[in-house]
Amino acid sequence: KNVRQVPLIELLEIIAGNAVLGKACENLETPLDEQTVTLAMKDECITFRLNDIEERDIMALCLTLFRNELRGDRGMQGANDPAGLFAHTSLSHDHSGNSLDLKSKAALKVFKSARGAKDQ
Image 1 (cartoon, rainbow, N blue to C red):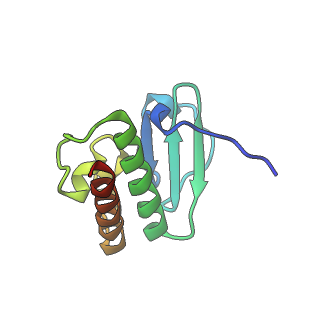
Image 2: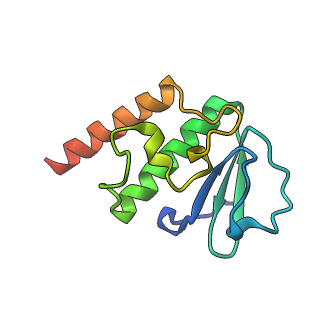
Image 3: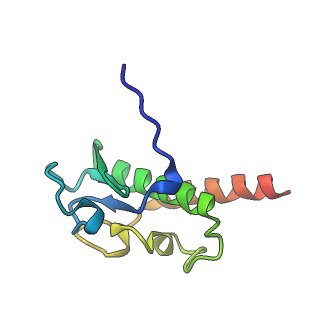
């Protein structure tokens, strides 16, 4: 079993689906589709293929929330609007079904309540 740790704080970009990749993944040869999430780091990219778009959105949302929390991006634009959380991901561009669904919004609510409990 291969295990690899990827520090979330090192993620430059979280790319949902087959959106246009930034410079971090310009030479990526992995085939991307609407069900993939790609994590772009300084020197490499890691792509995951999920079962459906809903799972893809939830994974991208959670990774973005956790990464932004580690970076201290609490005052980021759109913090009360789930779509605003994707300012630095491909989900900020509403490409062919990349909008957040009810489960993604529910995941945000759970995360915010957990964060609020931690701050008390």
